[in-house]
Structure formats: structure tokens, C-alpha cells
Amino acid sequence: MSFYNTFEHYKNFDFNNCFAGITDNQVQAAIQKEVLSHNDILALLSPCAEKQLEQMAQISQKITFQNFGKAIVLYTPIYISDYCDNHCAYCSFNRTNKITRKKLSFEEIEKEAISIASTGLRHILVLTGDSRKYSPVSYICEAIKILKKYFPAISLEIYALEEAEYAEIIEAGADGLTIYQETYDEELYEKLHPAGPKRNYIYRMDAPERACKAWMRSVNVGALLGLSDWRKEVFFTLLHAQYLQDKYTDTEISVSFPRMRPHTGKFDVSFPVSDKHLVQMILATRIFLKRAGITISTRENSKFRDNLMGLGVTRMSIGSNTAVGGHTTGNEYGQFQIADNRNIETFKQVILDKGFEPVLKDWQNITKL
Ligand code: SF4
Image (cartoon, rainbow, N blue to C red; front, side, top):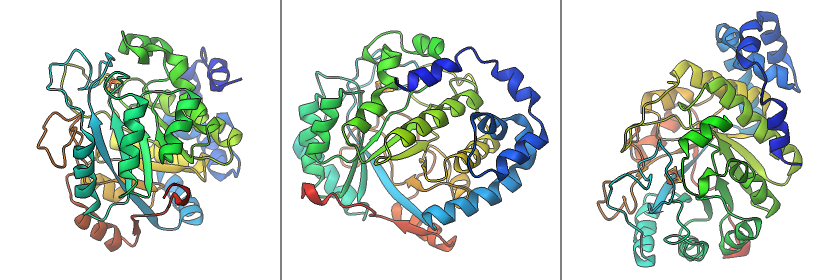
């Protein structure tokens, strides 16, 4: 039994008809419930719910303050290799794109770590392309061992691993995993991933569960917004998060909403997502998954991000650079363009001015010191 069984149940579901038929009363009922059903999630994600965002925002804020206070945890990504064997149509690091590839040496990783740590940040997200040749698990483990001298919390956004490999990286000092399904539409997934190891849809779908089985402390799931109908993508994302939360109660499950940004290569956003709809999905998520973390990255612009505080978001990146060695080497070939270029000090002050608390460290992996 895996999440794929839940997914299969809805595979041929008529979402369009269902969303079109949802009424104000169904949305109202969903907003008021303590424990929501799958039908309630559909109601909160429906076009009809757009008229009730104000009330959803009030409930979402209350739930967020009850469970997380006014804390906003800050983190930043560190890209250590962009070699990739995949053809993901929407990504600069797609192996067919003619960019100058780079993999950091361990000395370069330490320099990046020192540069990032000097800003005060203590949560780091390590990224690599999908290449077992250039960034094998052994390389990632060595990188983690260097990074843990500077960062008490280390998450990874890398290719899907076996359960035993997740156990290895945890042993090395990692405590969090971010892995997006990209799209839960199985047919579209095949089209967007024409070659490479990532082509295996079910293997990727089961990766968050393998990490939970290996006792990863936190696991973050999501879909890349813009590839398909966001309402369906968010519905499956929330079901996936709920499945993991119910089955692996020791793991902290969170959800991200990465919206597509300009990048190298020709790929148009097929299903643009508006700011209003991004807000709706955040509110629906908070009302449904009361204890789940919600992440918004620097893909979003500063004004929009500032306005999202208090609506359910608990974690935000800042000081981001999506190029390998981007903090120290001047490499310009980033994975995608970021939209919020503020530095950490400026962003911390904005958070304080809005009455929230910027949190640089909320976790210390004491067994790995
Ligand atoms: S999304 Fe990941 S796997 Fe796909 S091309 Fe980009 S780096 Fe490679």
C-alpha cells in the first residue's frame, strides 16, 4: 500500500464537473470543520471558494497562530552541482540545454558555506542535478559533513533515493528532504520527462515515503505550479501530505508552492497561476492540514511575499542564488530566475516590522555534532 493507491482512486475522477458544481454552502461547511474530508478540500479549492477568501484568510491565520505562533523560519539554497541526466522540459539544468556545467569541490563547498553562514542563516537546502555519476550519494554525504560545521539544519533537494540511501544521508547529518512530484498528472509527467531516471513516475511518487521510512525528520512535498491545472495539482499534493502525515507521525510534513519562473530553454507555462489562486491554495492547505509547514520561496516577489505573512506560511527562503557556487564563484547559470532579491538583514527587518519573528534556527541535530 502506497500513496499511489490513493492517487489511483481519483485517477479518472471528473474534477472539472465536480469543481463547477460546488456551492457556497459546501464551501462554508468546509471552512467551519475541524476535520475535513476530501470533498471539503475540493470545496476549498473550487472557483466558488474564491468569493470567500476573506473568511478563509481569517480562519487560516487563527490556525497558523495557534500552531506556529508568529514565527517565519528562514533558509537559503546552496547549489553544489548542476550536472543532470534528465530532460525535464521546464528546467535550465535539463541535459539538452547548452550551459556551462559545474560541480563544486569540497573546498568550494566550504567557501560557499562560510559565505552563507556569515549572513546569520542556519538552515540550508542543498541542491544537485540528477546525476549519480557527478553527484553520487558519497559526494552528497561528504558535502553534508562539511556543511554541518556551519548549519544545524540541513535539508536536501536531490534526485530520488532508495530507503537505505536516505538512511546514509541522515547518518551524514541531513535532517530534511524536499522532493516535488512536479505534476501528479501521470500522462503529462511522461511527456515532460522524456528521458532519464526521473521518468519513473511511481518511483518518484514513493520517494517521500522512503525518506519517512528511513526516519527523515522533515519531508516537504509539492507540485511545480504552471504545468497543469493548479486545483488538481494542489488536491493531490494535499492528499499526498495527509497520507504521509497520518502514516509517519514522527516526521514533520510540509508543503511548498513553487510557481514556475523564467529559465534557460524554451518552455511556456501552460497553466499560469494568479496571485489570488496562490493565496487560495495556501489558505485551503492551512484549513485542511493544520500542523503542516507551508513554504514560499524567492520565486515570488517581495511585495507578494510580505503580504503572505500571517496567511499560513511558516517558512521562507531568502538570500537565494540558484547557480552552482553562486555565492562565491560568480557562476551565472542559475536553475531559474528569482523574484525577491533582498538580503537577509532587510528581510528580517520587514518580518519584524510586520509583527512576526524571523527564526534563523529552530533545530539542532545534536547527535551529529
Ligand atoms: S528539475 Fe532536477 S532532474 Fe529535472 S532537469 Fe532540473 S535538475 Fe535535472
